[in-house]
Amino acid sequence: MKNLTWISGVFLSLSLIGCHSADRHFSTASDASPNAVAQDDDGGEEEIALDHVPAAVKQAAVAAVPGLVLREAEKEIEGGVTVYALEGRVGSDEYEVEVSSDGRVLEIDKNGDDDDDDDD
Image 1: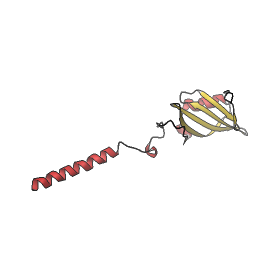
Image 2: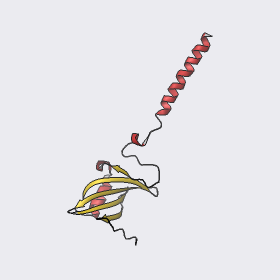
Image 3: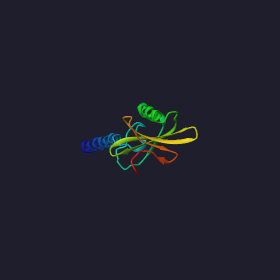
Image 4: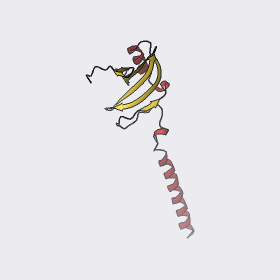
């Protein structure tokens, strides 16, 4: 009987340890690194800090709109590609510049007007 109690205790302990370590392999979006890329393709936007935007992305946006002072950024997945939407100002004009993670400027929006030459 003593052996059965001892074996049950060991089994229970190992089960609890296994559950605890398995718990560490699952994380929520709030646990993710700020540089982690979302895995879903639902087009949802995630606001991120400007210091978490890759330098090449910020440089491409500023090169596309000279004088752009960046204020905020969002990140989303479009067709499996990470896209950053950078918002900022030049004087009294507001801009949103969409840039892919490799630094390609995809769209420039000035004062809410679409300027991406896709005839919409």
